[in-house]
Length: 124
Image (cartoon, rainbow, N blue to C red):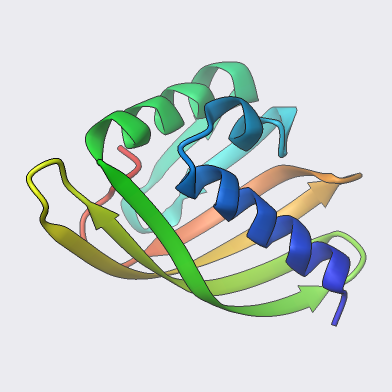
């Protein structure tokens, strides 16, 4: 397995879990496309569509967590990751999900991400 791609994906999710918008967006190319395939939703552009999506996610939940990763690498520029999600609402409710993301990289940044998620669309 290409541990570089695996480490890159896990570092991205760590930035999301910290709700660090600048660090999260730094993982994407300027023209990145982020598709939530299960809900037929697409966001375009790191500094516009993706920034707004992550701002809403971070405002919607008190805490977010991604873990228990399983990776399948198609080197040099693709990785699929299955993982668990736990989002905590501001009233203390925990929402658990099981997701799978497919990442395509351009250099060391994500240019395309396709998301398949269980439950409600947390990225709306």
